[in-house]
Length: 328
Image (cartoon, rainbow, N blue to C red; front, side, top):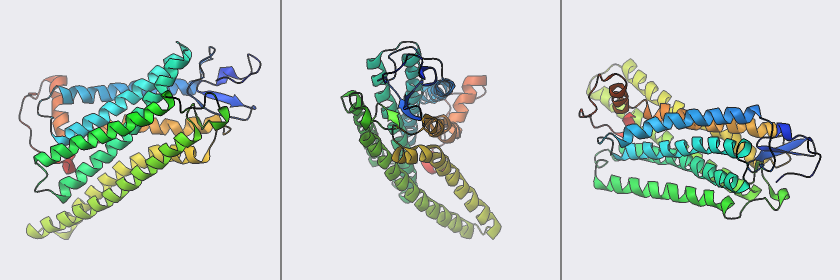
């Protein structure tokens, strides 16, 4: 909703934002009443959404058209790619509904899509972490029907919770009629964004704990292998450091992308400077851009299929070596 005021007050600089008393603003996901001058931040977010969509579309096409990619870990990677693809499309659609097709109802639906997709992305990362931990902790029984059942349960819970979160603003829990209840991301209310932020910290805490356990298991396994094969201590140390460095990159990327925005959502309100919301939100979108590089394109089986498609040097129907998520 637009504030009453002169037609040229600050509309040209708002985009997603709504100026308040000339000193601050909130990320305005429904400010579509009148045409706005192009905001460079919105252009960057739209371009990011385009790159995100292209990357994750490639991952989904590879997984969908490769019969060998039906193992639980590929289902989870596919869930992550689907969530990130929807997030990228949501960024593009919101840009279109703000600047090209101003329609408040469609803009509100796009807000729900963005909340659903980003929530599903974060939850899918947690599901992948759980799957990696169980593949190490229960290595002997991992390849069983129980693992497949557990994977489908995690997918249902992930998308069920995400859709519920996304439907809240669409079904009426928004601040369109009560601007004082708005958060830094309009039209989400302060309480809604608080729930999302607290949920993120719970997911992050669970992932941190699981990766600590994974590091312990990796170190213990590396030590056992070194003893059995009479490796030198330096070889064991190199393998251990490599494994820990990989886990640190995975968790560090996730934290550096999402923590600034999650913290700002807890501390800011609708009167906070609009620039802060852009600066913290943009890295969060980059997480969806980096996920395919970390979780999909590093996978050797997916690399083989991509090479087959690009240059025909590997047959797409060739058998793949069975790998556990801990290898990914």
